[in-house]
Length: 404
Length: 141
Image (cartoon, rainbow over all chains, first blue to last red; front, side, top):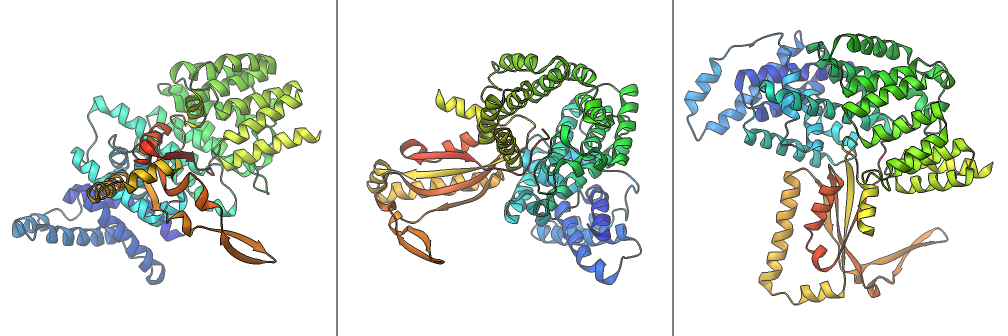
């Protein structure tokens, strides 16, 4: 990312917020801002930055917004509307951080998750349609259509550019954090050249959560999500080997971990656990912190991790929590105990036949020394996963055991 | 029951990444006969139905691309011999179930993908196959 790109992405939500507050109409303003950003991306690198980049963007976007409005209202009450427009304040409410309001609007419950992601990346993240399309391996027209239809839906729902009422706020925040976490996840195993654009998704999601955290520092779950992302992303340099294959946590070269990110994540989660109401992102961040603080895999405080998974299981149960808890428990009480609990867990229809069950079974059988059974479980998991890096990893586990 | 089991195996959990799916539409002798026996109005209604389906899937942002394929009589098998690619008549024309078209969609959940595939008319009188596309995301092991 160039300096200009970075600046544009940072200014995007501020410009959009200023425009929507001045003129109303989130959908049209968002288009106008996108056009202003594209114009700046073309002009600024060759002509240099304007004295006040934010004001330049607001002026350019406003001009575009007014042009659209003029042609819209040509059939209607032209003079009246334009007069109202021109009478408005030149720069309404400077310094107001609109990130949260924009995020809540982009993650409106009437939209599919994929639409929430695309709209968030463009309207709040300041990415272009083309950049989003490249990151998700989807044609640009599909993303463009997804964004314009999403905005129509928000308009039809009557949602306004303001914070939702308190009784809706918690649910809406859950959707926002979920969307940001999805963006993070999409990028987080990628590291090779062909997947460079996806690494950027990870950086973008961290940047957006950072902005949100700056605006609402007292929210424990926002802090928890930021800590979780930092503590997970810190391991990225070690997560893939030079040949592109996945390195499991136990085999990663911990010297490659990003100490700065770990220190920041640990500081965030430590303070949040002491001060804020507990929630699932904070517990997951606490688990990630325990992994990151172990200088060697053998130093990992597994009993503490089991305790945290027990807590997570109570406040936010789910199939991933069940399986990860079993893996941690096996490290404390032995792989046999893990296999017993896995057999029990499989009676849950959500888990029955899922590739992760087979992957965990392969891992636990491997630990018991039953190579043949482990190979079969790894191969089954490799056939059922939808992830190419995971498939390669599971296949190589199976063949490595076969060679022994 | 077999279908339900397979569905479980590939359905994604809430909170995981969304998945692309290919919907493969096959014609068989029965579906071809049904189409051939349609009146012009029925055929026009069938095409209008597909147009509406595409519009709906565009509105929700779920359709990435879809195409209808030409007749299998035009299908060729491509082989490389001595470094040269050559096209020859394949065994395709005689095959009973023939690929007639496809959709590439992106759905939030497996259940939603099944719902979309169920809207393909051939699901009622031909064969419709739903297959997830492999992705590059992955979880740490």
